[in-house]
Image (cartoon, rainbow, N blue to C red; front, side, top):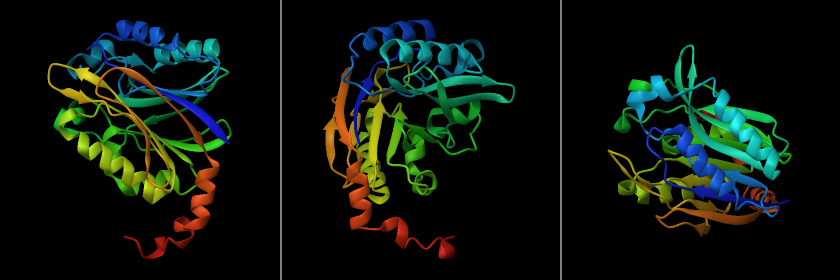
Length: 260
């Protein structure tokens, strides 16, 4: 099966959900019938304005879901909606939202690993569930930024047959070499497509690195963005995943009984 995917590598207006929605609306005007899935970056509604989350977080992600649902239905496209700051009774989570092309809510994933270098643990609570979902009848998984430094967590998401790993991020420019290396390793070891959308631009504390990427199951980078705002498009063929997993049967040869 072939899928056409667009990554929205955008700058994010610091602490301004309404401004960021308007920005995304402008990008979606360039989406047409040749796109199946659109992917947004991490915390695209707020950026890392963590000090104001009590004010700007989205209660139960209701506004964000409604906004993405409208876009999905209007443009008839599936959306891996990056992530948003979702206010819950227990606290605020960094939550990925997935909406299908009919405007139906598919799944959500709360970031499992909080990044202490950006003080996430002081303002956010951890998620405890995998990021598995099905899109276009294909098993998929989603993770957020720092999660890619935990290969055991990615493998937990991939052992049930996921063929696409969606990664959304606000990864700083200073560590962009890590971003590229880690994503490539995750593609090779899980024999899957890695579809990674990072943001660009600056906030008061960080400069973000872009370099959104499509990586095939051999670990080959097939498309890579710059450090500027852009829409990165690519077509992928999921038959490649099946063929590579037959060639080198990593999942069949696992020995989880001896892993600690």
